Length: 207
Image 1: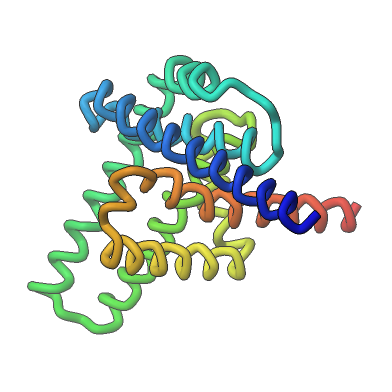
Image 2: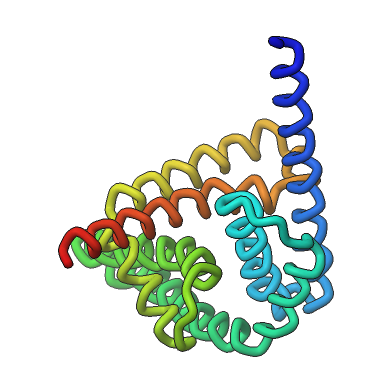
């Protein structure tokens, strides 16, 4: 009995690791297919879409077909949204440089760092929001901003997860070459979907 359970546990996790590696290489290949810049957002959204269906909600969906369909059908929309993130990011970066080298106001600098942190959380939660909801393209940006503000506990978890993953990547960089995209996306997706569940439960209770 114990041996059977151990065997099932090992088999289950071997399967998960193999799927995680396959997802990582799909993400890498399709990011490169889009010349990195244009492939990054569609490939990352497709990655989160597969994780949502296969790992979070345990749906039996074909790995490649599910990934490719999201990448193909949402390619233009996701690159439009990426351009918005890029413009905001460049604006914040320029402000940070100006604040650091020219204005040198501690209060302004702290305020700017806070805005940059919110921007980072918005980017982290964007892909789970995109894979979970069916919204207009600009509403995805709004919800990605409101979610970390509405769920500060999950936002803190996401920051801690990023810190742990960053430290882990410095210790075992080779591991991230083979499964890095899945290793980063899965815990962040789990945190985001946990936030969705709590918000939906609170909304149900409020009704």
